[in-house]
Image: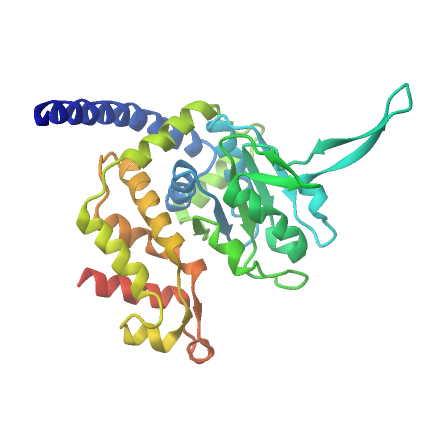
Length: 337
């Protein structure tokens, strides 16, 4: 019996290795295709892709003009996903996203309600400038992002699979905006900070995007294949040391867990969903880099994008000019020893 179990494990391991090698080639082609349109910004592209490969959502934060919207649209094309875009504005209503029921009347005079699906019924939803909509409208996404269905007039409506929300946000202009509630921030697998491009990348942008024609991305995989890769990532083995590193990092970011600096500077820290996000994203990062199992370095590299939107500083820490990034950097430094 023991021999049979070992043989089955070996077969499963070989199948996972073969599937991973196949996925590696496709991920490399996805990266190359995105690179035709998005110049530089390797870490931004990597983190956004990791969020999608992990089956989650991402919040892209950056000043205007850094190709956030273009990146989301390009990913939709390259991954073969149906996509729709919603420009969030203060007058946007929940029904503008979810859809609404209208009354129909047939030839016999019988009346009935018919549901008209909103733009959320897509595989990739681009929520542009998400913090410009009211909290009521923002909350329309809460159920969809966690449970992958919505409820309209008491009836459940399932969303297409896979379903991903990639939202953008401008960190500078805060007039006329509504901060995202903590419950919604926690539903984003990662917060991806989009910075200015390097000199060489900006030079390439100038040369490539101001001519007669621009490069266009083409599909590499489709939605069904993306779901297979997402399933593969969930099967990748994670060592005990890596699991311990995840638990140690997440718990050290919470007040009341024995870390003096955290107790002093952090008002509230990340919940268990942060650990789940680290586990999935670390597996995806390993596959993205051509490895079959994540390492502790993957956890530490992902600490900032996974944790920063799940923490808040005390008033005293903010008054001293400290940021959440500073706190996470110190925790990572402690973890490295």
